[in-house]
Length: 264
Image 1 (cartoon, one colour):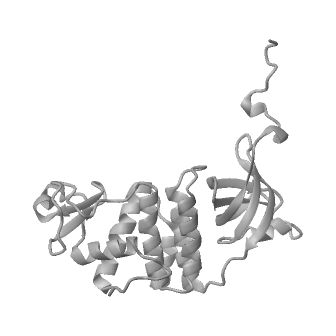
Image 2 (cartoon, rainbow, N blue to C red; image 1 turned 90 degrees about the vertical axis):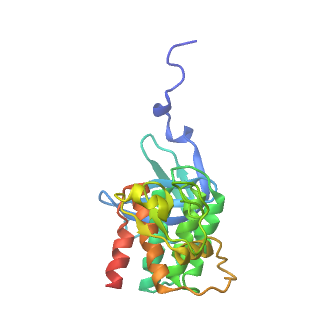
Image 3 (spheres, rainbow, N blue to C red; image 1 turned 120 degrees about the vertical axis):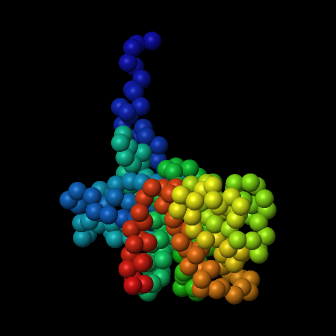
């Protein structure tokens, strides 16, 4: 066999590289160089994909106008030597008409999906959840919808914390039990174990907060079960949830910072 007869992987031509065709939800778009767009999306068959849409910022580029956050599109992406590139894009569904609050919560869901998933890890269940979440933002309380999405996302990506039992001693936690949440230990601590982890930035995680977490985890967006949400439990859950996500990703969520500014 002649040495060098077969090209190395990084020497393959565009025509020889695999084409990825799938339905996708656009998570993030930003300008790239002078006329291009850098796009992060989540697809039904391939999971998260990142690619460059060359020339997408030109006024006459129809495909570029379709690449907007929350849009549902059919894409054809060609694997590149360093980064993939868009070959074609067709509209499946325009982004919903969100108000400012709904858009802010949608951005949180999109950014959480981007930071908690790996490239090209197929998760069709997560794709369906993201699609349903964005569609529900205009029909239900967006704050609760995105909290439910975040909790379900942690479960689907393998990051879900332990709240039903103490991560220190393993004892089952009853609703009446006091408990605290440790991001480092990945779950709730009972009153007896709290002292041993006192320096870990513990958050209160009482029975009401744990029950709210469970309700949000099982929430059916189409037919939600009746549940009374107490403001104190809701704020406690948000604090420990987003603190835990920051611990897992070591990234400040830009969308969450924007949302907090809106509340102020």
